[in-house]
Amino acid sequence: MSATPQKNRATRRVLAAAAGLATVGALVAAMPAGAHDRGNGHGHGNGHKPRTVDVQLLSFNDLHGNLEPPAGSAGNVSETQPDGTVKAIPAGGVEYLATSLRTARKGNPYSVTAAGGDMVGASPLLSGLFHDEPTIEALNGLDLDVTAVGNHEFDEGAAELARLQNGGCHPVEGCYEKGKKFKGADFPYLAANVTKEKTGRPLLKPYTVWKKNGVKIGFIGVTLEGTPDIVTANGVKGLKFHDEVETINKYARELDRKGVKSIVALIHEGGAPASTSYNYDCDSPGAGDGISGPIVDIAKGITPKVDALVTGHTHQAYVCTVPDPSGKPRMVTSASSFGKLYTDTTLTYDRRTKDIVRTSVKSANHVVTRDQAKATDMTRLIDRWNKLAAPIASKPQGWISADINGRGSTAPEKPLGNVIADAQLEGLAPADKGGAEVAFMNPGGIRADLVHKASGSEGDGVVTYGEAFTVQPFTNMMNVVDLTGAQLVTALQQQVSGSNAASPKILQVSKGLTYTLDLTKSGADRVVAGTIKLNGEAIDPARTYRVAMNEFLAGGGDGFAALGEGTNKLVGASDLDLFNAYLAAHSTAAAPLAPPATDRITVIQ
Image 1 (cartoon, one colour):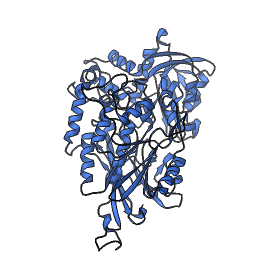
Image 2 (tube, rainbow, N blue to C red; image 1 turned 60 degrees about the vertical axis):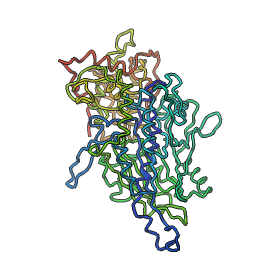
Image 3 (cartoon, helix red, strand yellow; image 1 turned 135 degrees about the horizontal axis):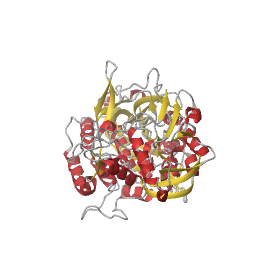
Image 4 (cartoon, rainbow, N blue to C red; image 1 turned 90 degrees about the horizontal axis):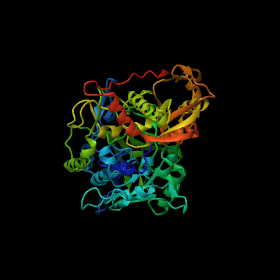
């Protein structure tokens, strides 16, 4: 998901690498048991190996450094019951993900685990505070075989991504544990469509080949071509991002020439199924009919040489067959986010053709439930890093009277979005702080909910620094700029038009700004221009307004080109500092902050 990228700070993430690893694992686990018996009589007897062998592909994506179970509604997956009702199941946490993957591998001698990117980045404090070293360490322990890079792998730039791959202590903060040097990822990060501008050469390996007993499967990894639009300029400086389909087809030809006929693409781009339930059948009524979004056209353009697609980025759960250019169905999977699901795909490998028997590919998503045994090595890892983080993480910032939903809210206007926007307006309204009259927050930058139930020993209702950081982990600096009323209106229309037409990005707005969002209309018309008011007065197209937003939005990120046209810029405190200051100013143990009303955007469905 697009989100506010963080700057070069210790809070950056290695999430993408982890995601990549997860995908490989999913590929391995997904192989059906007993496929090796489907040899049609070929090769049996005389001590010959069976003609076919089942390879299990276990995969996951978008882990985002969530080593501990994600809190609140963001930690649930939806499951449709036989009677049609939908049940929320708490899921995720690497202690459980490790157990799930290890259990799935049992009885599958040919198993490979892969990930679809965003293993790191936008991570909770436990990982983010240490530049996602804990997550890379956990992925190594999960036996991730390969991952694609995601957009968040670039949050801290190419040099930091290289460090996550190759190891070495942080260039500014050094080593976090005495006598211990960070070893880096023991799985390859793949970035086939990312090249260096100066040389034109790939930034990282474009592909890798997994081998076992003569079985060979190639993995090609790409991130979305639009990564520069959703990452700060510093994160992608000196890099060029290429078309996903052209890149995958190019390297599929190269693998084919090298005799690797079985190929899986790891793609950090995704789609939107018609239902958010992980067990929804998106091949109903026909193959791939229940999914939309960028991955559909990508899947239809990728050469038939590729046998399966492991995807991500949209944080959705789906197992679909989308026709390849020759019209044959091909598996396209995604396992939600935050380690809440993993995909188990069975790839039947034909030893004679060295290719996957596409008609026998089977796949399903499985919940990483929290009622199974924890992996003790992951518990030790979490405890070790938590001790290092505790002095910062456990410090109280404020009090809340109930859950304030952000990431877990599916509504256009989110209660936590209102709190964040109000915090930014309040902190930057004084004349010497920028004179802000209105504030905007991008929804993708809200990474969690504020949960009333205690996460540790702090007590129910207490918001700790670690919890606040998990909500806003990018530590973006705030900007206050001049925009005309006409530019403000255009920015609001860009929520639902242009690059955001198919998948709207509804900005969270500070108190005083109101308007109507009519979802029965199309494009920019969905924002009803005549209803946009600030403090009860219609927006004046010719007037200049002082507008607060994080540096990502102020750079035109997430398709908001109009916000990038601001002038007379003043740089303020970080978004996290303003959020914590607001919590401190508006809550006490006796008078906690209540979830705000969501009455700023009137939605017509």
